[in-house]
Image (tube, rainbow, N blue to C red; front, side, top):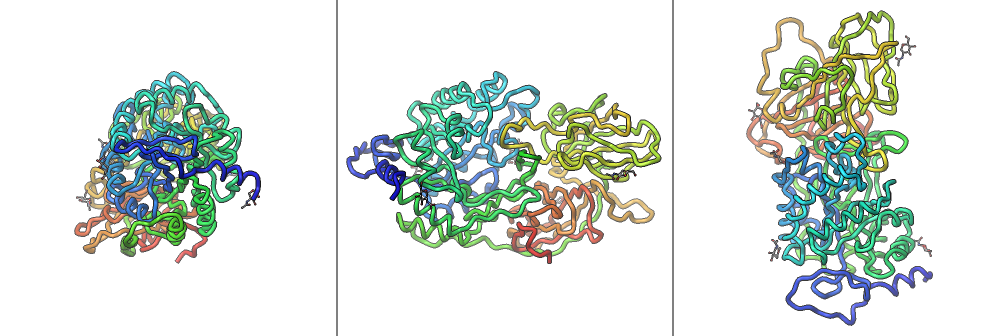
Length: 633
Ligand SMILES: *[C@@H]1O[C@H](CO)[C@@H](O)[C@H](O)[C@H]1NC(C)=O
Ligand SMILES: *[C@@H]1O[C@H](CO)[C@@H](O)[C@H](O)[C@H]1NC(C)=O
Ligand SMILES: *[C@@H]1O[C@H](CO)[C@@H](O)[C@H](O)[C@H]1NC(C)=O
Ligand SMILES: *[C@@H]1O[C@H](CO)[C@@H](O)[C@H](O)[C@H]1NC(C)=O
Ligand SMILES: *[C@@H]1O[C@H](CO)[C@@H](O)[C@H](O)[C@H]1NC(C)=O
């Protein structure tokens, strides 16, 4: 037994000498006995992360019950600010965003809650949960004591935190502790005034006695910038870290109090172009057992990963921009579709060695359906559909405007201008300083010529005649959620240069594709095809639509667009997310059963950005394919 281990064992929770405060609900830290105290008794949590924003509301109960039946006594959740305040001052706490309903279901299930309200959450979520409208102040210093930033944070927390009061454990709810910010020590700013401000704000709204804590990565630098007196310092680490070394770092910052690993990584995320990440199940169980035997409190990140529906995925930017895939399966104990995996059963066996598991069976996986093939038909290219997709029409601007300047924060925008001169020979179109955020699909007079991609494709060739219409569709692939580059503006951020000309005099069309599709387009507006030869599938950004015939069942299924290139998919008006089959690793999109109608034709809409296969077929499978290395059959 090494010195660290002896040190740790000495400082873990002893069960003797307990003062019991009968009848009152309390949750606190016992610095004498190095543990949490719940109602005056020593308490150890075995928790799992689940993000309500990544699971449709109708499945919350199912996932929570499976977590409870595994033997967990708590769940850890993030509150993504931008999910609740997409437009400044307009709040949404209903449907899939009904946080209090989620807390209620967890409470009914018998699960305590560790709340992580940010304001920044990372989470591989678009902009780390910060609303993109903050970037309308172009010089704002996010996650610091910047006045504009703090003002927005104050306003948001004054909406959110009062709603949380009645859910605090001491007030009859299930929230036992509240994390302030998130891995703040990993951020370059290291601004103690900001953290002090947040501490005051949280104490003001939640009371002085609520257990506040911070979570930081496992280095001294991160712990130094991320921790502050009055907020309990916890750490996070995965299977690549030595447990006693990890906890001894926490001990350097919290010499006494409970050991806490706030994020024990059960798996990992995928970016487009990565190999699918997997973390060994046996290693998870062994390390979990070791931590539990030290009486440490452990939260498994993730326990249920879920899905980045719509445009909610984040991105990293280390050497270059890397967008997170649609699935957030995370190789977690519960799969993206909520199925118990072997990893879950191993974890349950481990927990059983330390405490009683609730009696009764683990709920089985929900049934899946292979609905089979559907052939889609072309609706038209995006440039010819602007009446439907951009009802408010374009904004004129000498130079390009960003998404944020246009107040369209997500999705796609179209930039249109004319070729300034005849270009009989291939002429380079470039975007200096990497100003395409994140991908631009370029066509001249409706003919797709190619694309530019941030950090990867900085030049393409254009030919045409003076006055030809140049259309540049720009895709926001998700704002950076981690590190120093989180002021991640979208759109064309610099001028485009064609040969020797700076392109000017743009018409910029904001596109509200999701609104059009939610109100029934294109199925509602389908016209007879114009007479003449049938156009085959063309390259470039083109919409396709089709219907999946109902078969009386609305079961979970997985949509594969194997030979398609890259795009976005909607089913019955709901945005399922992005596919990018040829970059991978993800090959199927999760379709929750309740999205489907058992009795009416189901509407499928696809925006393919580069090129559809000749057969224009998609297929619904009964199992996910999250790794490209799985053979394409
Ligand atoms: C609020 O969010 C829910 C769930 O995403 C959505 O169904 C609803 O339309 C939103 N409400 C408003 C007013 O935008
Ligand atoms: C949480 O559940 C407990 C036990 O079922 C119940 O007494 C309590 O009222 C619930 N709290 C809230 C805020 O609903
Ligand atoms: C962790 O590190 C300690 C030394 O600090 C060492 O004794 C122990 O064997 C290590 N554990 C593992 C699992 O490598
Ligand atoms: C552009 O055209 C030039 C001249 O034809 C050619 O050398 C170059 O490879 C082309 N570049 C691209 C990216 O297609
Ligand atoms: C499909 O779209 C049509 C036309 O907008 C609509 O009437 C129908 O209800 C939609 N089907 C489903 C299952 O939502």
